[in-house]
Length: 140
Length: 140
DNA sequence: CAGCGGTTGGGAATCACTCTCAATTTACCG
DNA sequence: CGGTAAATTGAGAGTGATTCCCAACCGCTG
Image (cartoon, rainbow over all chains, first blue to last red):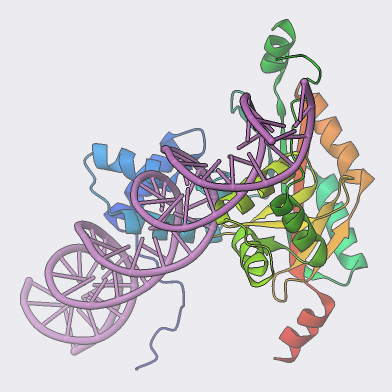
């Protein structure tokens, strides 16, 4: 209790932590925590499942990764720019496009303001059929 | 296979089904499947948990109810107007406001179009602190 | 009324995730 | 450079939600 340091965020760059970050950088698509754990297991770095979850959660909170919740309740993570953005996902092939839209941001703020809400965050997800899949579906 | 009726939706209005609908109509807020099951149990209608899940899922697909996924992966259901809309939720007290915004709808369509996507649906959720909770938090 | 099929329900099974706690690792001090 | 305290790890049990299985059931139709 010497009070030399009272920083609440004391995350250490351990080997496990780095391995998870690497695994995330490797993949382009969303991966579930379990998948990441699996990949890590196959590699040289043995990381506990609990650690994967912990790390992923921390990264999600600090905005380093995106989180998406599937219908079954399983969370998928994906490394992305720290800047705020949304996704356009193809419901057939899973292709994902990162999009930004200041229009929505403004709208969200306006609506929140109108109802007296403060400190508002928002989630937007667009789901449809990409050009290729649309064509395939039509031909079918 | 007499071809007298080929409607794919052959849902029978059974007592269980009606009970679930009633329970949904009763509540104003989101309820988890388990909560609904619990309420039904307390009442006169004994309904199996599996049935509740099945029915809720069917209703969600037909758009009769809204589904929301909590961080723990538990789905919450709420009866709502069939018309498309979104929610503004207080992260502290859970208060929910139903909102509509043609601005977002247009934006979503524009963005989807721009990327060649078709048949696009979208999900928008605003999470913040309602007026009351904001005040409380400030005073704290 | 009889028969057919959609429907039900209890409980086991599955799945994703969290918790606990001792052992290990890391950062930092002298 | 070695020591110490605190952060971190990991294995497995525990939790909670949801699905599966399958035989009994019930509403609808003839």
